[in-house]
Amino acid sequence: MATQLSPHRRRSAADQALDANALELFARIAQAGSFARAARELGLTRAAVSRRVAAIEAAVGMALFARSTRSLSLTEPGRRLLARARTVHEAAEGARLALRSERDQLGGTLRISAAPVFGVHVLAPLLARFQTLHPDLRYELIFNYRRVDLLREGVDLAFRATARPPEDWVAQPVLRYAVRLYGRAGRAPLEGPQALAALPCLLVGQHEDPTEACWLHESSGARHEMALRSAAWGNDLDALLQMARHGDGLVLSPDFCVGPEDGLVDLLPGWRLQLSEGEAIQALTLPMPAGSETARALVRFVREALGSAAP
Image 1 (cartoon, rainbow, N blue to C red):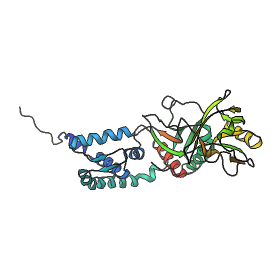
Image 2 (cartoon, rainbow, N blue to C red; image 1 turned 120 degrees about the vertical axis):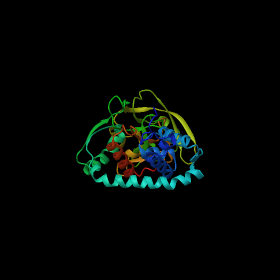
Image 3 (tube, helix red, strand yellow; image 1 turned 180 degrees about the vertical axis):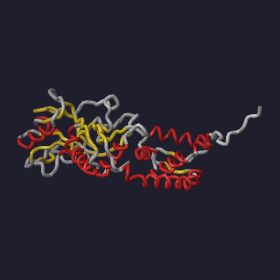
Image 4 (cartoon, rainbow, N blue to C red; image 1 turned 60 degrees about the horizontal axis):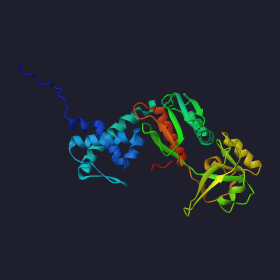
């Protein structure tokens, strides 16, 4: 018996590779100019974007992007495809805009993890402003220095100081910072890090014994390694900042915790402490579709408020 062909024939791999979703993805990557930036904008990991582009290129049998260590550009076939892909992307964006007024009314509960120094000094005011825009939104705040297991504890959004974010989470830098040495206003700046050897320091964390530290000079690149002697230590930076304001202790603090009106001055101008965890606060969310749209909207709000530049 002859087999009848269904009017809904199975699509070839090339057909599937160039469906509307793939074309919109292609247009978004070309517009972003890098896989990393496109991944952040799409709420995907960089590895996921690379895999999808590789699948498209394998199916159509030609390279669409010319890759190098520093840049991403379109090949000639890629440029020809981009005009059609942009049409698909613009149509999809128009559909999303038509539905945005309903979606913009964000609600539910967001479980947010952050270190107290960032959560209190930077994040809390932004959360209040975002909640004013979305009054149906609620927060559960987990502000501590414990390493929170994001998946096991059901965290929607985490802000971490890390140079090595988890590979299965989407990481977006929201704030770059430096740790500096501060003392009460009126004190003269130190001649250099070597002057710290005999001075009392106020340190966040457990520092009963001398702590090895490396200072970096921001202009010359000079390095100075030394041991810091703690006069007080603990997990409450605000308490240590108060001690520095009212005494002779010198406090190591992220620069985003100290403002010009706080009665503290930088005693090692041009020097910053080298940090093993890097010098950027990263926002971590689950990739789409598992991640929360509300969490991604909050990340966009925080990045815009802090003027975060996407690298």
